[in-house]
Length: 250
Image (cartoon, rainbow, N blue to C red; front, top):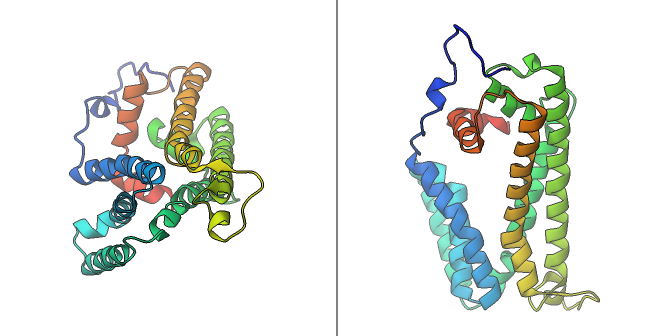
């Protein structure tokens, strides 16, 4: 699709101004940024209180939507989680629980991407690009269909690789890795700091770096896309709307 629209109205004009950030989205974003920092702090310093804060932060992220509506069951569940976490205060269980999220969430994302590649489904990236292009996925140009399908596969493999790496490091980390907890000292070990830097921080750098590098490559391979630069691309992604993103992983 060319940026030249001739006499046709610019269908993207409404997406160019900065979009107001929904307060709930802003809060979720702040909580999401806070979690890896809290988890890393807890893992490096061995602070049980900070580990509890990180786990509570994660619970709020997951339950934020029903909490805001509000839904009574969500508030009761959050209260139960809070009570359970408080009961674990002073134990090593919170530190053990922090091993799981980097594995679970990257594996879940990989499964979501991979599931969209099954016959009869539309690849995840194809759906996003068709939304940006203002058309239905079948209307994408053949080269875009091929590219977005292959890119969905690459994201699937990348996230699966990160999940596997997180799992291996969680097993062999010392002193709080899973094998050490089970009483089976691993032959090959990494420090708790190394595990935390990779699982809680570097993961996001790898994902963000790949996202940015792919954008630069795509701009060169497919010139004339309906976004002018990277900030404009992000604004248009946000401009697809909450309903689009809620249904993306259906």
